[in-house]
Image: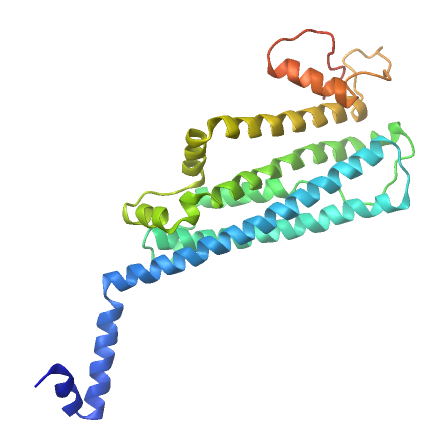
Length: 290
């Protein structure tokens, strides 16, 4: 008598018990469990990539609004529409902070699966909490969303104008989301073969691991992108400092019409500083610029 005939000859209750036992044995099969974990891991990776792409778009949108708002205020534009920009920056910042918590919750589940942890709450440690709070702090910094239209350059420094400028420049720190997006779209993460090899060999394919791999694979392109972005951010920040944050090193120095407040002079000074040449023909005139 075969096994199928033996099971068929049993009463219905015993057949159900036998089926349940077989299901439990199948659930306890390590190959099946590993397959299920890899499927869930793939879905979570895809979900993380989608959420991070949305976060990148929102962060870039907020940066573009911040640059437009700052340029309009530096050029003393008093249009009515300018009062709507900072509230939009505040709304985008709130959405971004909410997505950070959502992304980290998915990342915690992914970490639990990679390390065979049944209860995801075990993965919540003090270093992880510090990382999450630091990420929230970086993305939460933005100008106060109140409506004020500058009527002159001096009004930028009245009341809390200088605080607004110091809250504007750190928004460029949100660009770290682009680096994370590049790593999440890397073949080391998107390819099933590399994920499986890393999973089976307990090799953590983290962001730092992927960045090191990219630097080794594409060193020229990677460093060029980093240098160009750093150059542009430093140039624009220097220009804003020299034009808006007028606290001169020499108190007797009058505000010049042409100095590092122009983009061409600011980018020249930034390039000279980066290359450690230091001609001295253009120098920062304010403490903020220094």
